Length: 240
Ligand SMILES: C[S@@+](CC[C@H](N)C(=O)[O-])C[C@H]1O[C@@H](n2cnc3c(N)ncnc32)[C@H](O)[C@@H]1O
Image (tube, rainbow, N blue to C red; front, top):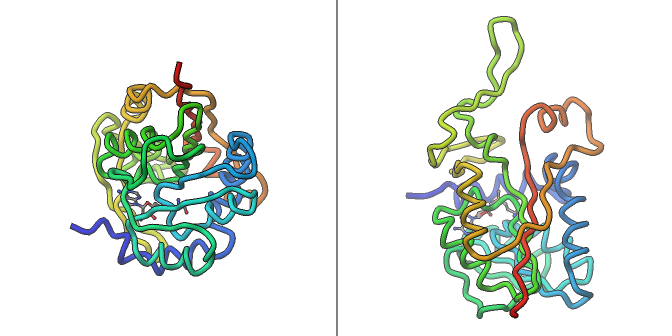
């Protein structure tokens, strides 16, 4: 069964525009770029963006001088990425089976894509495999407390809006829709991601729940009121 990405690709490209949606533009892009730049070992840093979508973050990393490769299973998004960034390397592919040799990349990025990967155990194992020893896996993901919401915002009897979460420990795929996009997102408890990453022998070196900076105050409110995004940086130990 489709996960909705092929059908939603056109609306997704329109929604990203040149600058990304609100959450990317005013919450995640700046800290993600800062961490990526710090993790990169120099201008020839090789980066794999797993679930790169239409390639916006690859283009931003390429602007920092990095040698970027983006993979994504959605053909229309990869076509768009290639059109906007012909010098970049893009391929159709899934996180669960990365077509690269072991230890190929200095930096592996997953930007709001873990929630889209059905077999997350295989996806994380593959990300760790293609990372070189001493390299960094940089992740932005929807917070698991956020994806535990079945209904999202609700208005209570007194007119106050509340964000309801439920069935936190039950892993499941939820259909979510906004602005012409309709896709499946996976909810998993935070312990699922943490256990899988620890199980690969990776070491957590950074954790953040970034707040919005700039943008219209009322649009940023929801990122402050409830857990929304989280960022993690994991290091693959050097061979001893
Ligand atoms: C929320 S979008 C994020 C795209 C991009 N990283 C960004 O931040 O704009 C999630 C992406 O994951 C991709 N995706 C879906 N299943 C995947 C899988 N099994 N492996 C890798 N990527 C997948 C989708 O095609 C989509 O482009």
